[in-house]
Length: 103
Image 1 (cartoon, helix red, strand yellow):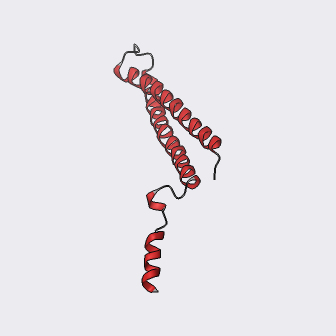
Image 2 (cartoon, rainbow, N blue to C red; image 1 turned 90 degrees about the horizontal axis):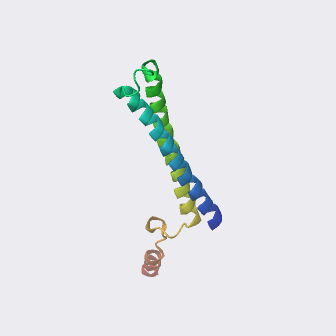
């Protein structure tokens, strides 16, 4: 069973990483929209394809990595507490009733 301190630290790191990824994606999105709308005065029109590619890569990084981290965190919680969820409970009452019927 994973210690509570480790699980809490992992949860904090995962959420902190998600916040940092969201801020980074927002900055890239703002820069790309500014160039696309033309509010930059035309200074960065040559860099627009590079910004769109950076936006796509940042979207992938901001979605895939936190999703994987949150999945690992959920697995850690499920492994640490295996019998607290309804799907993982052992149907002992049903097994005992079947055993009594067989006897």
